[in-house]
Length: 364
Image (cartoon, rainbow, N blue to C red; front, side, top):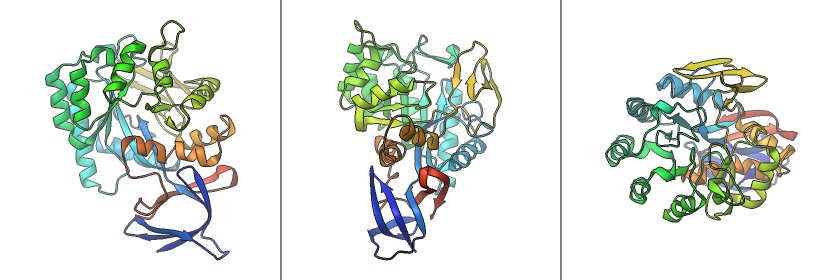
């Protein structure tokens, strides 16, 4: 099939008057279009969320089932997201293995799914920087359990958040050599230790500024290391709550094309008002998820919100904000999505001016 586009956004740029040839669910060719009738006014690659916890009803850690994965995927599509990496937060080994098997089966039985794999956000994290994670499930890493998780996950285990201060260099290398994207987060590590693991090949942190040793003029911490290390990617939740917008603006100036957007949504679309999983609790109060202690218990932002906040508050161009919410997150995981180029999937968003009337399109 062929579609024509007045404005095509991809990889941080905008092309005018383009024609896309689509075949078998993929873009076969992108070329100039000389006509004046367009199928779409504005078209961009579907958004990509590499950190998300739940859909409108189900939370994957509390309910690691196929129903939860479907809920996450379909709920995200309402916000223009074509690909998601569900997170499993700190929980028991039994829950971890069950979740890995669920994702593996789901991806096999749904070959066109937008589920990219699984992000293990724990259990090998810092008790001090655990955030809303349950302390009772936090573990010190041991070689045997790490190997069992790697073997059980295989290619489905895309990403793991770890506290580097509790890992040996050999254990970090074990994960990297297995193809796992290692992310430093929920960590109280020193600046020196952060730089050591970055030198081993770790090039990602988990939600910049949140649940990590903060910058201090005598000890720059993980936050300072992430800002200063040129090869390290820094996902941020641009909601003004998890990080002040001025802190996000500072990070943007320092990280430039290494700063990307995530939602880290506990649930999506403000449908779930209360949540309880064991001792983990959350209530939707004034648009934010707050636990019984009065602390943040998860985000409510969508990837579409990330784009609009990037433009309206952080001063990005629409081209830049879209790339930080699509192509760049996909690049971090080495996943073939997020660009409107030949060879990429034919999943898009279309919208009016000012990023209004957003719709998700899937030609697969």
